[in-house]
View 1 (cartoon, rainbow, N blue to C red):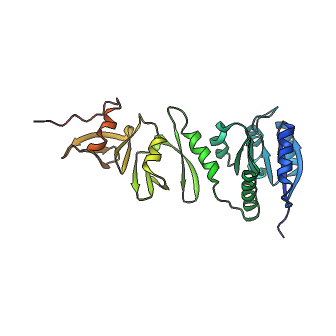
View 2: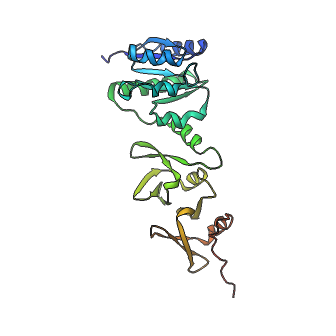
View 3: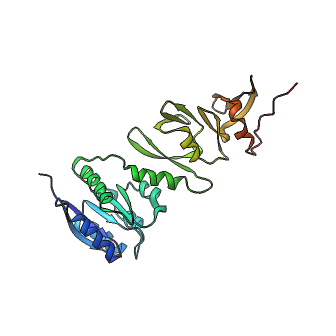
Length: 263
């Protein structure tokens, strides 16, 4: 029989703690071994009672949830499920390897999904990336006019890839391949969805199968039928399709290819 999973609840709102207690009751393999309302108390409790998992609010008194984790040696950290009313911390939660990100208000079904993931991690040392959490990450990383990170699921991992490293992107069936220097990342996605998450003043769709980072473009050369050859710093040569030329011309980067002669 699997061992009991010990849980610590950290939230300064009594109703929030009560909800977590009630949602945990049907899960007989979980035991609540403590509750905290502030950051310093939480840090001390984690070291003292050594929980398997902590349900951690982010905005709490004394020190926030992230500072709580920073104050503890990595080898002593329990699994972390953030429980918060604020979605803007999703990317940072991923960076500290949170197991999940419960956004208030959540229902019992959503909570039970998290519990299943905790069980997998505690008993088997693994868990599948949570699709809801992944969506939050992507939305948060893409928020704002100049997104500088891209959330990419590849080879069973979720990566936060700096967009400034991406030189160009190519379609490969139901997947896309991101070229970043000597590295490349294959992920299941569509060109249209990826294009919508990138800064449109830096990343331009030049072909139905290619998106290019203008920072890595060296020049253009006209070929035939209104198409252009696109030369990248790394020596790659891509095609700027006539059908997509308007996207590049809409961006004032000083890289516009000239209009083809009508003579």
